[in-house]
Amino acid sequence: MPWPLIRLLPREFHVDFVRGAPMAAVISALLIAGSIGSFVVQGLNFGIDFVGGTAIEVRTKGPVPLGELRAAVPAAGGHDAQVQGFGRPDTAIVRFRTEGSNTFVAAEQVKQKLAVRFPGMEFKPPVVVGPKVSSELMSGGFMALGIAMVLMLGYIWFRFQLQFGLGAVVAVLHDVVLTLGLLSLTQIEFSMTSIAALLTVIGYSMNEKVITFDRLRENLRKYKTTPLRDVINKSENERLSRTLITGSTAILALSGALFLGGPVLFPLVSTMVFGVIIGTYSSVYVALPIILLWGVKRNDDPAEPLRPATARP
Image 1 (cartoon, rainbow, N blue to C red):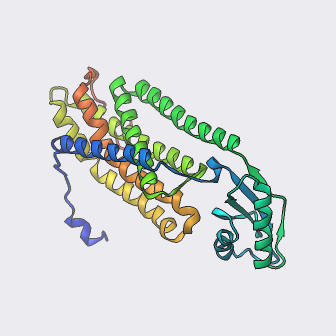
Image 2 (image 1 turned 90 degrees about the horizontal axis):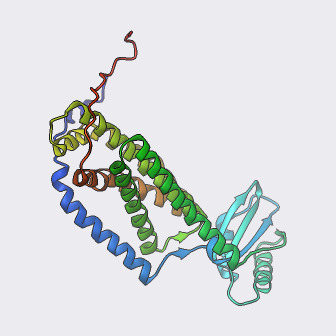
Image 3 (image 1 turned 90 degrees about the vertical axis):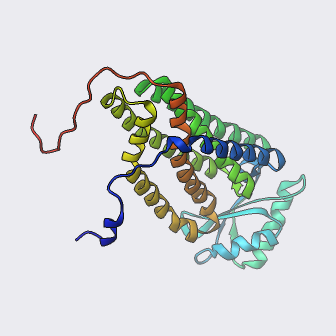
């Protein structure tokens, strides 16, 4: 028996998406300007991966008290502390940043204070990540983002048309800038995990664009004389229920880790949640308006009707 409240939902949607495009363009421009302003004023809160620091592997007699250890490292003189379990329950990796020129001496002082706070804790020799390694990680991470964008432009251009590819890349750039702006505004730590989150956001956003363009292309073949504005509205209304279900399902799946995952997972999951929301928005109000302004080449091939899975040729 279906859920009774589903009957309250409309069977068809008739939203004029194109009408709201100018207002959405103003909102996006303001958000991008705010993101750039945040970069200029305070920048990103780079973590140890990008600014350098010390990593120490520790081992305890029982399971590592991650919460207590995470709170004890700043008191011992380690800034921007990160504590993560490593392999076994009694092993963890402690990462922190120290002040001063002699990093090894500062790391030894942190070890001594932790040894007093946690009797019986064993330490392996510290590993220091210098500024040179950090700069290489930063350049490599942003290079990965750039390569991903170029490859996706080529894929969309090959599968659809050039204006589709440019619309998708501009929309994904919009998503990346706003996501970085959020990280800058909130000063959430930016690390290699954040790079992974951004790549995930790019993948999700591009997937939304492909689905959007695919429905638009099919309707362009079906409605050859209908104005492009009306075809865009019809295509988006046809896939609106799918968009809402997919986006809400992704956010619900991430909500558990967002609220219960603790400070270790929060930068990753919060970035992904924001990316899902902004990626869905940009599919409608960034990518499609570019196509509307540029125009498209109507395909002269007739649309192929879909057949049920059980139908025989």
